[in-house]
Image (cartoon, rainbow, N blue to C red; front, side, top):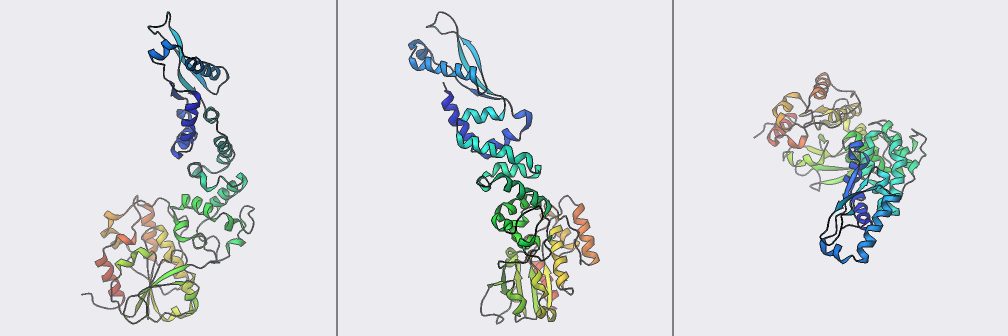
Length: 387
């Protein structure tokens, strides 16, 4: 037999599991009613007619009279009894408020009240996220969460156009809103843009002036160019400090480092740029041969376009349909394509962008390219013969 108090503890545990919250609060009419088995006393307990049994029955009678929910009763005949007796069989909760009341828990009631305020006020794209990850925002004022959600719906990649984040007033936010709610904003934007805001950093993703340093991985691909095998430099340092190589390879993702051939004479690779490519306007780069290698998806081509905006002579590598076709078995769905049509692409790159947008699996990440093919392409760019 389960008492209302025992079920209250179980229902509280269920509330704290995200999948229960999602299925019951966003599951629609099919999620309700919820039927909870109470269980019947065994023959020995019934025969003893203990005070505990009488109190058990009285607790369920009170629930039946006062709620929450309702109790379904069933007649059961015991050998020790002269006639069948009515026993509580199921506790039926008809709606979410019944569930919350049944927990008898003030924390659950408080969180439910927050969700009642926030969920109806935000775009449907964010409801599951906010419901499942309440730890991100439960301590914030509901108005701030709703403002963050509205802001995340209006922001788009590069929309800051080089201004600091504090200067973006989009939906009545103050100058410190981005700073105070950076984590929440990134998670909301990730929901729309397939994790790009977290991967690139909020300022880089929005094309804002970096008020905190963006660190890039710098790797010499030839001996004697630098006293280190690899180092990290702030992107602002690259505006003024010229690297001692005639060839600079810009790589979107750091993880592609293991595919780069060595030695590659007179070449330094700069990895992990993402959308933060404003440093490519550095004067010293105009006297270098610069190549760019990124993912083949809509985002990768947007990044290529932004890089070429700063450095028009930049050459793209391994970002062409023939390379995609050769690795088509590694292609995956791009969950959220870039909403922006990229500028500063060459005609064949624009054609690739349009072609990728129409494919069901239009994303080929650079880490999946054959290292041998990567090596050959880089050797050709350098005017060298591969072994």
